[in-house]
Length: 105
Length: 374
Image (cartoon, rainbow over the protein chains, first blue to last red):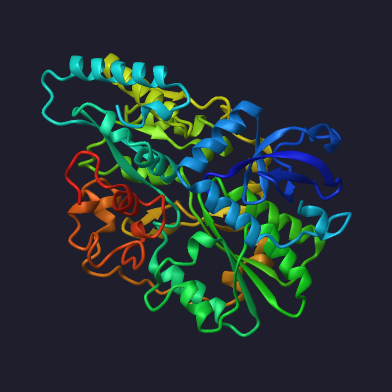
């Protein structure tokens, strides 16, 4: 819950609602990006960026190397597994264009 | 040297340990007890155990495991309040999985669920809001807990619910803030802590400026740290260097994620939705002034405490439970008479055994590094 997990923004889900689709180790879900978006800039600017995701909110933009190192630590301390479990079993599909199944690969 | 080989940069890790040893050797003269460095964050506690960092340190340096595990400091009475709300016929009670097993005075949320309460484990407060929209005939209550790391997520969800006019969503707010907590700790007259490793992700939200009082008023060093073992060793070295130089500064080892002034959008949402409570009760630590937040008046409609009359009964921890002393560093986990006997991760008696970030659960899982533990 507190450690979060790195993911990559792969698409804009809903510009007006400030939601992007984030891929976290192969699982995709809608994530609120208001804390990492440049005010006034289109969300498409964020596509491709790596972010630290905390309980469904992108909280910090990080580089790819940092993302990989963080994932390694989380895996080693057993938190990655717990976070992925929460993400896959605890996610209620948020309504985004393309339907709920667009969230899962 | 155990574990060091698997670090991102084993040579750097070895060099850091060597330098820590050298400083300790220089500081040793005239010192009759170890330098106690508190890591505030439960995530750091977990990493320190997993990587066996305590075993790498000279005898003159020890970690003290701080109160930064929100699940661990949740008082029993608040869990009882959760259960009371969850057991209402009209309620869907949504919570992070971490909170499910925390013992209340009669039962945990997991037990309430087994007895028929509609308790749902969700990943995000956004999922609770979606549940509310999908179940307009039910009341969906989200159990908000955590420090500043998770506070923006619930604040932004409340703002989203307000914007979308969702009327059957509310928040049972149990968020706590780190600064009043550190101040309360520092004001203890017999505090034996020489310096701090500051939390990484709380600081990502609040920045490093709010810690200045620790250096200015209490003359203790604090270094905000990342979560890799290298980060923790480097931060510890930075604290020790300050101690050797007789300095007290706030430094940021985790600048790649933590900006000096925090995250503006997150802080704005938190300031919009929350205000400090006069006081908030912590498990094991008692009441700490200004350490909790509640929803501001304009968002009262989303406040579960106002929507449902919660019992709000103070419940004392079990008499044999000594979580409070462990939380303040006065007692080592294994010195508690219940450790590993009446209190295990499978059947936790006290909160520090519940979460993987609690120091008792960490000692139970990884064993004591310096030989005293089971």
